[in-house]
Length: 292
Image (cartoon, rainbow, N blue to C red; front, side):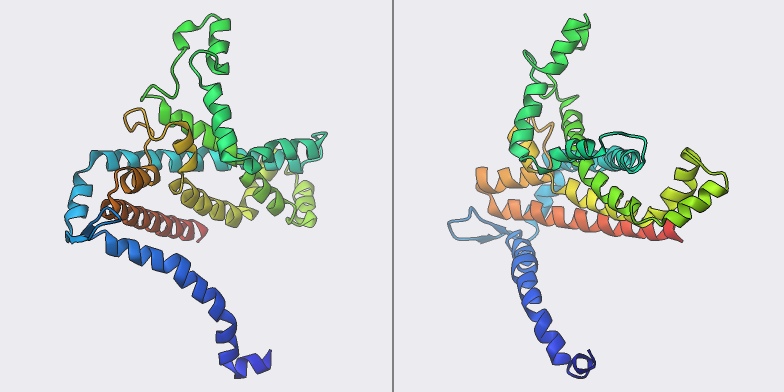
């Protein structure tokens, strides 16, 4: 260790491979996309300089603002429902009351490891107007007025997508919280028992404060994951109906590869980077403020 401190070039040599791949595969595409955003280009012919033209069009583009709003819906519902659900299941499974905990862990975590395409097809069948499980249930209990075209109705479609995302990833956060719960010292919990704390009181006063770092980390993961939502929506609705379920990633994909507007698609990807960066910075600032 002392030799490494005296010869810092050894440390630099050890870090160089990771730094090289980070620059080539992470930083370079971002900078390159930012460069293309100033051009009108279809990806094949000669590029034409537009300056800030693509950005001016983006500001006036109602579809982009709608896709940004849908991303915000997914972020907010994921933070408010996904993380509490994961925490709730983790606390239940960490206790000694529930029998068959290994089975429940497998069941709750299974959606995380299943292919997104499989899950999307499964939920598309659930939401199907004619034979879907939800509409069939309403018809059986005589609530025909509740039968809806869940993915075809613009009022509901994005929220149906949010429900599916919450179901898919709650198990991921359950595993994170479960690992954190098992690292809490048994002496602390025994001391709480001696002081008379039990049930919800112990969870609120002991468990949650000791999980605060894990909760804040999960929120940051939730934000970044929600802003990268693409495959689920592309498989289930392709952003429809009438862009009701469009998110920034699907709009960027369609503008770039379907419409052949590489310059404008690069502008959208730059906007995604800026929005993601701002949300991560704001969340970190909020987390630090809450931790003080």
